[in-house]
Image 1 (cartoon, rainbow, N blue to C red):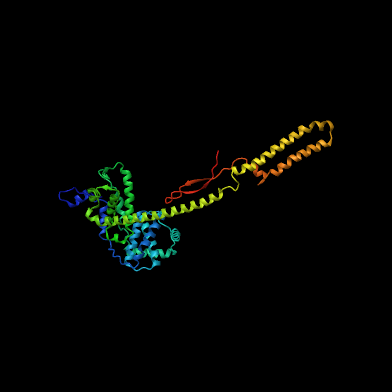
Image 2 (image 1 turned 30 degrees about the vertical axis):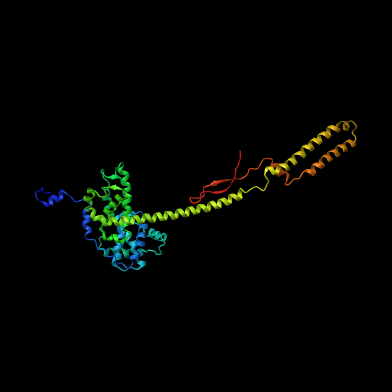
Length: 402
């Protein structure tokens, strides 16, 4: 069993044990042994496509950020050393993702071959992976990196830096921060945004991974308008001053502004397309409404009043004549029972009916005329907002009076 020797004055070893280095420092020492990226790959023009492919695959497989960044870094270093065909680049990308997930994730989260083939089909990748090809590529990658996958990336530092990303004395827009929890949550989103954005451009590979992580935190503080942009505590933690981070931060902010402009242009295009669709839908809806609620073929009440009066008065006259004929001839009929009185009453009734039949001009079936006893509801023009460009678009709509 080891026994620790008492500390002596001037004992450098004892002072080192008494003041252990932060967890990030050993990784920063490993950065010194990282291979130099030269950007000599003949397929460097296709790098962005394969980086996006690895990002989509890692998100589909729910891999951690460290596994995704390690897979991308392995692919960058391997492409920088060899001239690889496009078909082999697909196999290399999947093999890098498998190696990174085996190194960073738990065993149950490592993607299976069948799942990778399904994801490749969903991503329109015309490559069917085989177990033999993947194993062969994995062996080639491991031999190329001397079986050492303990390579630090910016994702390995970011969580450590985020713990000190917000301090109690920081100000937001010149005012004290009221909720550190909410601000730290937004800071984490911004930092991972810049971290994921840094892998899309190979020019960031010229910076150390720890510097990229520190610049991501500083750029996030600038975007969130937190002052000061870089504190003494963060400088002591990351071992980087503002002068060390300035170039990387400037690149990140330039890409951030371009990304904001591109997103704004896309939003405008989508808004214009949506407005055009609304205008077309309103036009189609207006045409349908005009067909359904078009002006009635029947005449208004003022035009029907004459025919209705002609229809109602003959009926009243007919009933009155029939009642008068019965009252005038009832005694003679009951006393004498002759057929003349009956014929007279029938002739009177027929005579009273003939003028009425001649004066009645029915322009439509009687059932329709009876149904039009009440005034039909007319159509009114109501104004509805059609779009953001045009003020309103008028089309008929039904009005039902009480």
